[in-house]
Image (cartoon, rainbow, N blue to C red; front, side):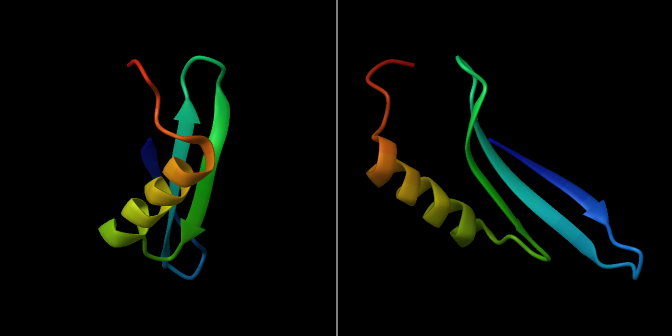
Length: 58
């Protein structure tokens, strides 16, 4: 998982939260917004946990 950010032409920052499966390079989640607080990242990870389960091995 990683955050990316950029600046819009009007000066506002946009943040993108990416969750990528490193084994097959599949994008599991991509969420964008003008702000992305920690609780939003936790909610995204919780949704992924329900949807695709957690890995047995890391």
